[in-house]
Image (cartoon, rainbow over all chains, first blue to last red; front, side):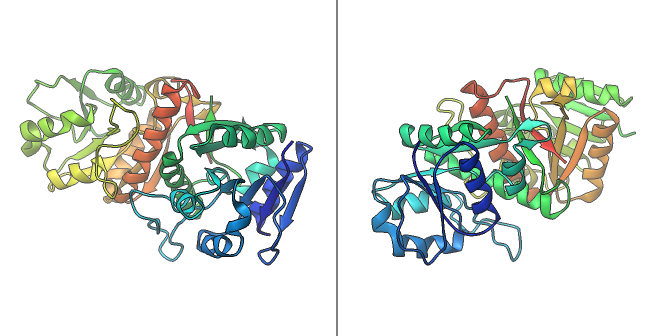
Length: 189
Length: 189
């Protein structure tokens, strides 16, 4: 199984590391100052605003790798809009900044707690994965399913725009206490 | 309880009529050629492309009423994008065309079958409602909950953009047989 490096030390970084670990995969948790990335799959578990710095520091090392964008580029001051262009996405920006990497969007519609418990409202937690490289998506899907979750191919990378809308909407509902941070959107097959 | 008029004769029109009926509410199902609208709440259960015609024929009668937009403005030829501006929504267009009406977005994230069965993946079917008029949203929510479903206030009408992204994504997943037309996104509280 592919080695996974996770950049970030927050709850999402730890929850994704747990998923990889449950599946028996090798995982490195890297702080933002670590400068060696060994995984074939690299999860950027940092806020949207920190992506540019990661690209500047580690971009050359990410060439050829599967790079997973989990961000929700929400304006957290107003909680009322996304800070990316209306016809774009954080993932599209990242793919443009890392042309030699295989960028996929995933995990941004999952709350950390649901990655750990493996369930949302009685359904298996489902990781929606968008990307233009079928092999990259399959590689990540294998790790997700080995970790006990469901993986669903959500289409090409331009579907990241819709995934980020789902993530944003879900965050607004949780912030307004309409759904719990342990619940949210489930995907019933 | 407010009388509901439903314009349209498709599966969504019938499923929404069932919800109203289960709650004991009065409902009229109107074909596109009927020219009298009696309900206080009017559900436009027609495709996005037919909304302009409804506005042209019945707009004056819709003044003061709660008008419910259920549309998913998907380009059904490519199934790859929405036909509304990236920073807009079908609901926003409708609200602009009907300035004297109280437009809400609802039902566009629900497949017809889940309105009829009342469940999605073991969760109660949840109708996400966005709008700028709190009373209008509460009126619709009352009808939805009387009909045995959950209603969740999804925020102001500008959140229709995200609801339409959710509806679009869900349609692409169903078309690709990643989810069943009897399932899809559930909302776990």
